[in-house]
Each structure stands twice: as structure tokens, then as C-alpha cells.
Image (cartoon, rainbow, N blue to C red; front, side, top):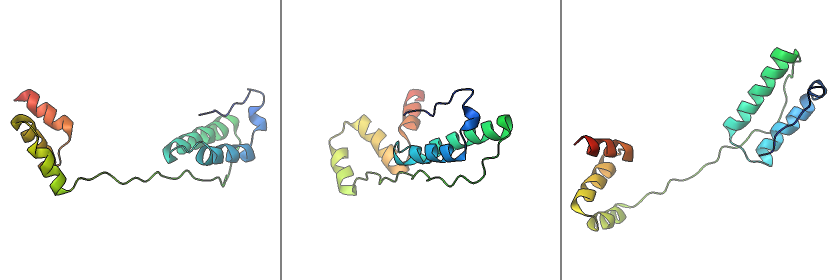
Length: 114
């Protein structure tokens, strides 16, 4: 991802218009996550407000969109087909994961202890 470059002498010449354009570019062109955009906004606001004493005000930039996704879910029949093909030890582990909703790391820790 490209960065916003400013020289030490040119930073005070960069104002709300350039910052609005930068934050909008982050969302539209670079498609960053909302949290990445918020970090950039907070860093710039801190720099301008606390160190330069310049109030940015309402910037009115385009917010980054949260990427939505649908998780892949197996049907009970598909899970049954998978379980039929497993060795007994592996089958027990997968049944524990599937039946209890545990994460793989929990089962690995459990197996290491027992």
C-alpha cells in the first residue's frame, strides 16, 4: 500500500483537503479495512491536534467498507461422509471438534496432555 509522504517543511501545508483525499483513497482505491483507516485517521488527528496545534474538524471522507463473507458450512450428510473415512483416533478428534464447537488448538492441547 502506498504511503502519504510529506516533508518536514510541507506538513503544515497539508490540510483537511489532502487528508480527506488520502483517507478516501485508502477506502476506495486501496480497499483497506475500516480499522486500518481508523488507525491512519487517529494518527493524523493526533499529529495535527497535539503536535502542530491545527484543528482538522469534520473531514467528510469516504469510510472503508467492512468486507462481509459467508462461512463455508458442511451439511450433516457431508460431515457423516467425512467421519466414515477417518481412522478411529482421528474420528474421535473430529467428532469432538464438530460436536462441541471446539477449536483445533483446544483439541491439540487436550491430546498433548492425555
